[in-house]
Image 1 (cartoon, rainbow over the protein chains, first blue to last red):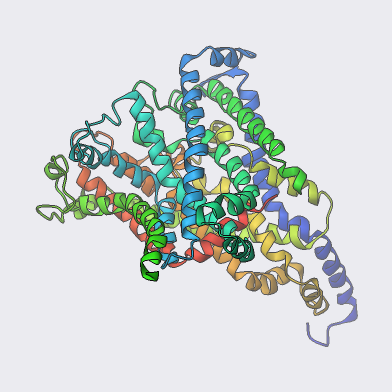
Image 2: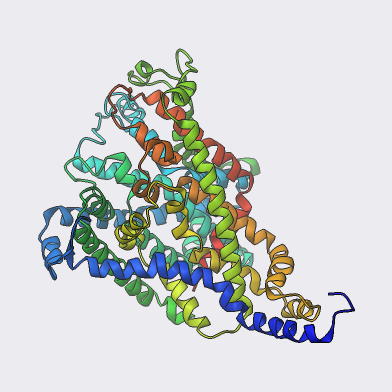
Length: 305
Length: 279
């Protein structure tokens, strides 16, 4: 680009300059489009198509219409997995969210010193490998030599067969989920609480409202949009749960803790039932999508915008 | 009198955080101390926190009996490549969506946001078949390639870039800078905090990722840490399933990343909150 550049050469250069400016946004977003089509849109459509076939990866897929779905809805193992998953969802909504709210309120309290330290402590589970921590929990839950039962015995309670009894195994999974996710949602609630103007609380204090009254009369109502938003996220996340039951109990005992995504994994990947597994995925997708939509409408999140 | 009142005002707050912190941190402490126990002590009742005999050979055994060093390397390599590619493609596409008007822009962006509502389980099986047909199972490429331009990353980068004034970009255009030059020399340096945040979150997600590596990886040498950890718990003939060793492995997977993220948690939390303001 020296000053001696001949005029004839500048013309094509200028047109290059113009066309690159025009093409730039397409080129910049192209890698995303390409990856999106190959690794997201195509497999999404393939899942719908596969769900109508019987195929184990070898030979020709066999068209069987809706028979995968017919089998799915009469499969007691699927219903078992579905009811477990709904249980995980309800537990997440009604245990984790209230716990996280209380924790956030406490962390937001002016009485608390070293807030950063406490917040880090509660946040640490979510940055930890789920495999690593779940393996620690298998030790803690052990019936004969686990820490939890040792504690129960010490305070005069009977031992619990945490991972061997179907009902307690569900409880074990729920405790693990709560342990992992409470701190994560606390961070959202805390951020929401910190954006509430101090003036409300000062006015309430003058009126003689105590901390608990302030929480119910000021914090909760003003936090409503965030709580509802988190409820949507928690619901969708809990319906797709995989790791916790897969690692802690392997879905057992006798499928008592099997989740829908785990059932999909076992059928589709382990047993190579590609069509049947895809049908499970499609049912899961429709469920998650419609519940999210119902929640978003009911909570008026679209309207507020 | 005032002190007494203050004490009772503060008591419930501290009670809740202390009990909460004990419940949250006990598994970590237990993991750390169990990694210095031999198996007879782990299977001993009543359990004690501190080992009676400190055993330090769980750690070297991990590297001798199993390719733990390789798993570590795999996790680091995959994490670094994944992070680099995600940062590049997300910031590039984020720039495109934030600073240009073009045909199909709002439709594509809506599609991008909508795609985050689709459960990964839906595409798990077809994606696995696809990756198998591309002969990419058991490879780094199979792990990384499908997730190089995630919707979340593009969304976060777009948010960061929208605040850059257009005048700055126009000034560079007048100076003869190409569009890619503007992205590379002007936009990227300005969104360094955003890149740091997204980079940390991507590396963490890659480090802890379990489901997809579980599906894609086959041979023992190729495993990443979470899948390797899981492999330690399987009964392999001739190899003992020793919980002391498993706890040593869990410690080496969890502790470095926790320390790292405690050091930079501010960026991490801001990224988390940012990703949530979709509505």
